[in-house]
Length: 390
Image (tube, rainbow, N blue to C red):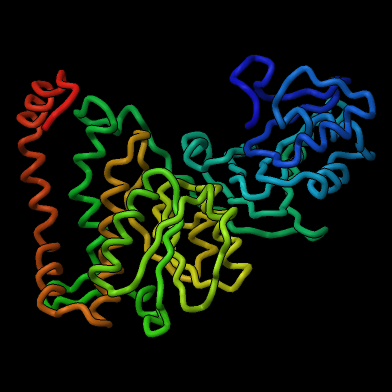
């Protein structure tokens, strides 16, 4: 959130009367305006985080209970937020609201958990439920409810997949090494059931639903490593699918002039459980009637549920921050989509067949590289001392 890394800016934040406490994930874009308005009412600010403004706002407009108050608060703040608030006078109840920032509620016996990521609580929960925008979660002792526009919402629970970071390390020194060695399995996951190598055919219900004749442009939207995968994707689509392609970094897309039409396919790429910036862009495109396609890793994620169509990369959990297997998984999935569309358009069949055939041996080719991992490591150490290479 806004503000420097300091003890004063850490969560949870408490109100001046120390009655209300909150935690916040996201950025309140109109916090300066709200801050000036509250200062006119003699509220004093000793910290520079936007979250503190929300805390004082709750204290200022509090009305009987948190549920009613937060309904008013969400109409006053703009930006991305997942907020969880507790009232010292009613300590058995926690109320949470969200818009664009991710939020899940987890379950284990009689315990409840709130988190921005299901993976973060996977080892302490049995099930979880993703919370959608404009929904409110009210946890009260041993019960919970999710409401939207005054109505209670019933949602199915999703089983948590625990990831034991100790036992799952196997013989590898760290997770980055392990995840590099998982790449051949990831390739097998992506290709299995999608490519008939005997008949050189790509088979996918998601791809068969694409209105290929009416796609005149591809626009990728992503951030981080997914943005780099999309950047490569622009070349693949232009070379193989014969369609002009463009890449947008998701943090900037919403501020650009958007020419959304039904002749453009918007492709959203995400490895994580929720990519808030990409999700926000997806909503903009959907609201303006754009066609959307997701290349996503996590089944049941918000982006997966919101896209008209899509393919999963099946890369499992990526523990290490530096993306390895997820990046390769995204590239391979983009390649499959580009080949499928290209074969339906003007891609030379011999070129198509050559690429499809080579994919059958891709897993083995990468395994051959990994067999020489120690030799590669020795070479890397030898040349790592050089600052420049020609």
